[in-house]
Image (cartoon, one colour):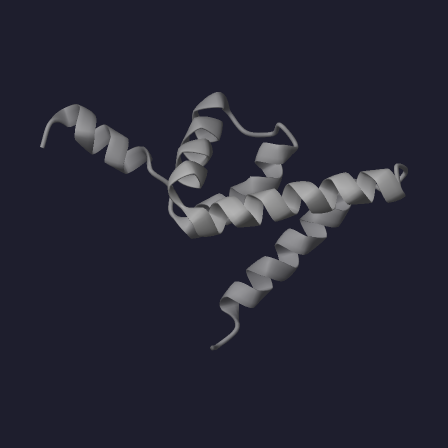
Length: 90
């Protein structure tokens, strides 16, 4: 395998990494490289693409309904809940 292919494979993000990065991406809080990695994943993964679209719509709706709401705090709370859910036994 060529070095470039290995580098590309190493740069690919899994679904869990993408889900944990989505909010920061939408808030413009990720590096350009990470944004490209997430965008590439979203293009190739329908499930994560749908999750990203839903999150964008929820954020837009919240901003319309409650422009004074601190969305960053709200989404950090959702992220914490999501991480707790990752650790619960199935």
